[in-house]
Image 1 (cartoon, helix red, strand yellow):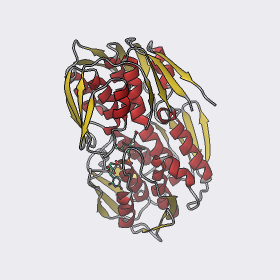
Image 2: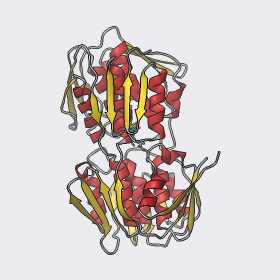
Image 3: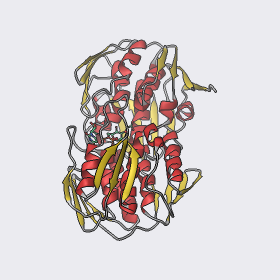
Image 4: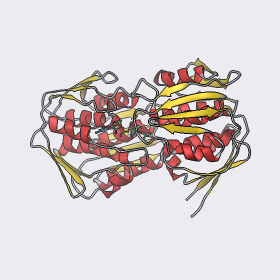
Length: 420
Ligand code: EPU
C-alpha cells in the first residue's frame, strides 16, 4: 500500500488546476446506462473511484473508452441483474440502480454496508423507487427493484439529516423514463445534482428545478446520446485553498467555481484567509493571524461535510477554540485521533469536535481512514515541523487526482512511496 511522505513547513505558492468533480462524474457515468446511444463525458478526473465505476459499466455490458480526461460510454445492450459484488467496494456505485430501473425496469445490486464515516442507509432511494411504482425487496444481502411500468408521482425525499445527494440522483434518473410527471420534494440542491440534471436534459430528459428543493421531471419515452463537461470539484478546490492557508502561502485555484463554494470561502475569510476572485480563478492567501471559527456541516448551500476534516487541520493551527458540529454523518471524526498524533488538541463531545488550536504540529506516521480524513492529514503534515508519513493513501487516490504531483508543483516536499 502506497504512502505519502511529507516534509512540512514550506509555504505553498503557485497555481493548481482543479479537476472534474468526483461526486458529479460518478452519477453522470451511471446515467449513460439510460440510453443505447454513445455518450461522451469530458473533464473526467483520473481517480480510482472513476476507474471502478468504469469497471461496473463494463461489467454491465457497456463499452467504456478512456482517452485522457474524456470518457466515452456506449451502453448499447446492458444487463440489469447479477452479482454486483463490485458495489460493495464503492458506495457511490449505488447510483447505477436508478438508471437500470429506468431503462430495464429491473435492477439488482448488493446492499451497500455502512462505512467508517457512519451508517449509510438507502431507505430514501428505495422509498423513491417505490413511489414510482417499483416493487422493492431485500434478500440475501441484495436489493431488487422491479416494475412493469414506472409511473411519475410526488414524493418527499427528506431524511433525518435532510436531503440525500445520491438518493435524489437515483430517483431523478429513474424518473426520466417514467410515465407522467414526478415531483421530488426536499431534493438535494448540491451542484453535483444540478450537473447530473443538465447531462440528463442534454440526453433529452425534461427536468426543471434542479438546484432547488423541488425538482419536476416529465417522463420521456427514451433518451439519446449526449456530450457533457463535468463541473470542477469544489471539495478538491477547498482542500487546496486550505493548503494555502495552513502553510501561510498563496495559491491560485484555476478553473474553480466560486459560486459553488460560498460557505467554504466565507468561513476561510472569517478565519483570516484572503479570498480574491478573478474570472474563473480564485486566489487564496493568508491575511495575517488566523482566527478561530465555528462550523456546522449541512446540506448545500451549508458548509459541506466533505470539507470538514480539512478545515479541522486549519483550526488545529489557529490560536483559540474552534468548534465543528457534524450534522450529516454521525462518526465522521476518524481523523481526530490521527491529528492528535501530530500534536493537535481536539475533544469530541457528541456531534461536535472542540479544537483547542494554536499548538505547533510536529510530523509523525499517521493512518488514513477515509478519503477526506486522509486529506486532512496531508494538510496537517504540510504545516507540521518534520516528516509526516500518511499511510494507506489508496483512500486519497479515490478522490484526489495526482495530489502528490499537484502539491509538488506548489512547492510542497511530498513524495509517494510505492509499495507492491
Ligand atoms: N441518508 C438516509 N437515507 C438514505 C440516504 C441517506 O438517511 O436513503 C442520510 C445519510 O445517512 C446521511 C445523509 O442522509 O446522514 C446524507 O447522505 P447522502 O445520501 O446525501 O450521502 P450520499 O449521497 O451517499 C454523497 C457523497 C458523499 C457526501 C454526501 C453528503 C457521492 C458519491 N458521495 O453521498 O461524498 O459526503 O453526499 O454531501 O456523491 C466524499 O466525497 O468524501 C463523500 C463521502
